[in-house]
Image (cartoon, rainbow, N blue to C red; front, side, top):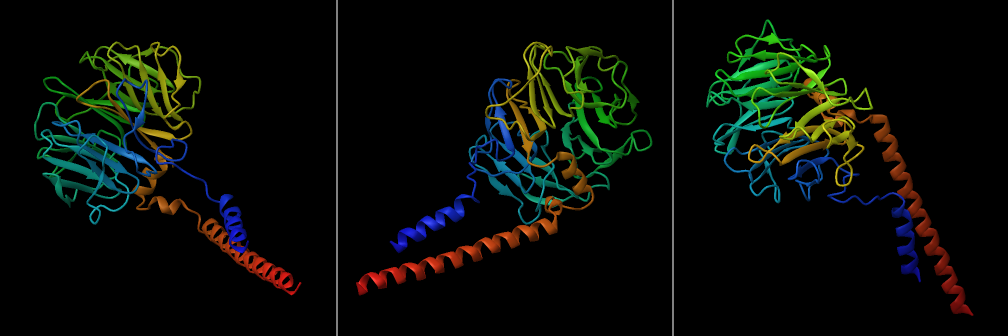
Length: 392
């Protein structure tokens, strides 16, 4: 009887304070998700992992099964399309990894922590490359389409260019571009290629290898642009999002017109944009989850089911090998806060209130003490009952 009573007591003490969370439960965790039908269905791409925030993903240019994945706690690599993941550079790159990328042939890779930029040759030996101040935490690494060795870095304070596959970097547009975060970066083919950077809510264009820059915002809401994306079929066609509205340009960004209808929530913040080849299906990664339209942006619906509906979506990327395959990332905490903490040299742990932690610990100790006292009382009581029974 005593052993049964102890089991019941243990269950009662733990049942109220332990909440089961499954590795694939979108209501409990952030993480990386993949769709192979342009957003109609989504599945976890980091199965078996418990990820607080998905910050960056890169697909190997020669092999779609090889992935680099930056999270709020570590850098991960997969060689089989996300079925298995291994931790990269645990001793060198501890903590959040905000952006990742491969060079044009996939032989070298890049990653950004909150304070540094790292490079690996042949997938190993990650080293700090001593990038200029303002580069980290990077928002993205984007390969040039014209120069094999060139890579662009969307930095926390400006745009940076490397002409040796990320070994060294120089700042671009130092006296022209605002000295703030490049929140969205796009390179489109041409001779020369066009480079579009979204900073301070406006789109800047360079058509000469990032040497000179000019504004491109005719028809866009001034200071409210949040994301830019290329069209799958037409080189001169671009898509942008801002002020809860999608915009279209058919002249490489010189002029813009609204596309479809604005979203119902005027205060929504867009982090990523993807549009199908025919312009019929659109996806927006926002601070309130993922939204999808299947009628040319006439109506918008939040994507539910296997995607988190209450978490921020800060990552939306198209697989370069397959236009219908998309990657989306979600975070338990606000992305803006993570970027801000990184710039200040903090970490996600700094968000925790010491007083709250102390209070929670004290409450846990209180529960343990009460459990011990209750167990001892029950032991004494039933021992007394057993002794009385034997005397009878």
